[in-house]
Structure formats: C-alpha cells, structure tokens
Length: 226
Image (cartoon, rainbow, N blue to C red):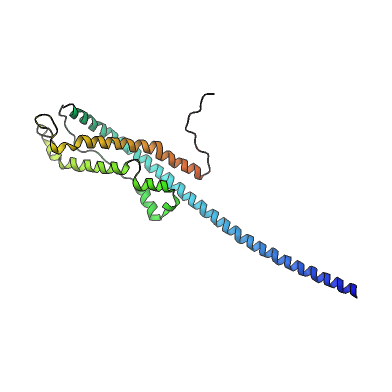
C-alpha cells in the first residue's frame, strides 16, 4: 500500500511538473514572438528612415549639380562683364551692357522636405546647408537681384552711348559707381559656390549615402608609388 501511494504521488508530481513546464514554454513562445515583432518593427522603421535619408541625399545632389551647371553657364556672362570692368579701370570708356544675369533658386527639395517633415531624417549639417544656402548661394542670389534692379533702373541711360556712364574725365558717373564692385563680388561668389558644390557638397552627400549603406568610403587620394 505504501509503495502504491508513493508511486501515485510520484506520478502526480511528474504531471504537475509537466504542466508547469508546458505553461512556462508557452509563455516563453509568446514573449519571444512579441519581442521579435518589436525588433522587426524597429528594424523596418530604421530602414525606412535610412531610405528616406538616402532619397533626400540623392535628390539634393542632383539639384546641386543642376545649380553648379547654371553657375558655370552664368560664368560666361560674368567673364564678359569682368572684361568691361577691366576696361573701365584702364580708362577706355567701354560700353556697359544691360543686365543679362540670372539666378535660378532650386528649392524643390527643401520645400518638399519641409512639407513632408522629412528633415528629421537628415543630418543636422545637411539641414543647415539646405536652409542657409551654404557656399554663399543665398548671398549670390541677393547680389544678382541687386545687380538686375540697379541695371534695369538705368536701362534708359544706355540708349545714348555718347552721354552714358562717364564724365568728361572718363570716370564712371556716380549712378554707375556700383557696377565694377558688384560685378566682381558676383563673380567671386559664383566661383566659390560652384567650386564648393562640386568639390565639397556633392562629395559629402555621396559619402553620407555610402556610410548609410555601410559601404567603404571612396579613396580619392592617389596611391603612392611602391
């Protein structure tokens, strides 16, 4: 009898232990499933943010390349104006051409980013470049607008080349004194913006894209001869 009771108690104990183990195992499975779901959601969110950031970087690089091309096109006009400035300094009384400068402010990416609130997915340095117009782009735009306003206001005086622009000593009249300094300032800003975009801004954007994609940086330094 005692042996039977001992066997019965051992069996009950074994069953209870199996039930506890079963419940613990089921709890573990549920916990693991919830945990993995959170991990997967976080991964998908991080991946989505990376994709958005890369998309903005790529689009911004395209817009900057278009801006650099426009600046190079404007340089041809500025070269002609700089030649006039040199001739003015030499006292040859050159004809001052009417305004022909343009500045196309590419803000599609900036506006789209603000409207969709995707700037929070970008690095703060890139945001600052977009907002403030790094490499003097914002200042260049202001200078070109000032040049066009001043030039257009004096456009009627260009009709008579004999009376326009110079006094009897060959010096610029007071209302044309702005021309040489403004042309030189616009030329300098144009070159700074153009070179900064091609040599720093676009390479930085491409470097950020490679970093996000976990790609090694491109070695732009020439290898030394062995």
